[in-house]
Amino acid sequence: MKLLIYGIVLGAIYIGVRRILADWSSRFRDIDKQTRERDLRERKRPDVVELKRDKDGVFRPSDKTGNSDDKKQ
Image (tube, rainbow, N blue to C red):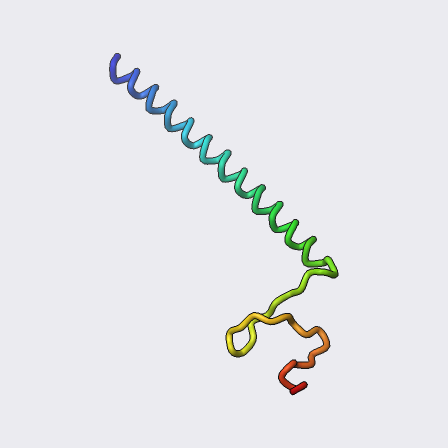
């Protein structure tokens, strides 16, 4: 009888933990999806400057015309 009660309690705990983990992981997935959609919307704005890593490792605004700032010197 005691063994049956322990089994039921441990089973309930196991099922509860699985449900909590599933809820959390789905919530985190939703947050990641919302963040990704927000980032994509922000990139389309005209006042956002996209930075690219240059050859020397420094991040600089990307030149959409294909002209490098180094050629202007």
